[in-house]
Image 1: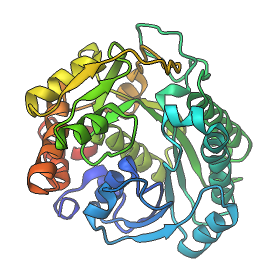
Image 2: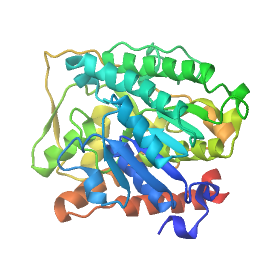
Image 3: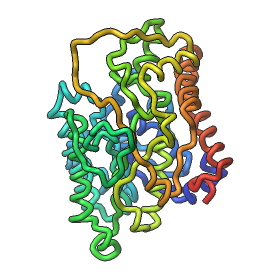
Length: 371
């Protein structure tokens, strides 16, 4: 097992009780796998897997799974009382921009009210030591700058999804100041609270609608072409394991009682080379798997979406000593290769990708792989 022969993250997660909300989703399922490999006792709280097929079911993890909605505050609090987790990674959310236009109320209640319920459940928990709330790069007031947004830049949001994530960040800041203030740590409370922001995350096992990689992979599996609605939009693409390594490193610091790490953090790719257009991403995917095809067609559904959005990760690099590992070519190769293997051979390459990522982290002496 990955975690049995290493001291990743200073072995801080071994035998720790870890709650993941949204563990049946794309990022949540990858995180659940990694934590089990690190020796954690994982409790997952989530709605049923959102798609068929889905990554979580294919992993067949040996964890506690509770079917529940984060808008159900009583059930959340009962879960924390029963399992006494020491750290929570809160990923449960409505995560699609276009769906947020169709269902704005559901988006705000899931993302903002759901986070309040999570924070209140943590506030009433005697076991909780660390809380990491996962939001989005879209929480920033996007001015289409060519440089990256820093953690201190204004929060905003044009569309319902982005605005709900901006609201979530304000909520987290409020609860940090009011109930989990770092200055009162060890006196008034025993819990450190962070929010984490990542951008366009790709990797194997994502089958969500209205995301470019899942759309391309679904179409390729049935020899169809994707109709692209926004081919010139520029995004900084990163593999799902990149931000997860940052979340886990941050969680390690919080579990160690390192008060200075309470706050907001960006996790994104390292350079402008990772920021390419949607059509360029599709062309690179076609190189890995020639069945990937697309065509551009004028679309009357002109919903607003950002054209350019990038994160400044200097804070994570300087203070956490965190750095991304895989360049864009590797990220696309690993991602598209995952789907190609699944489509052609029904192979799940998640464990292989995780092991390769960890091996490279060790070779490059990343902070979380060498402590």
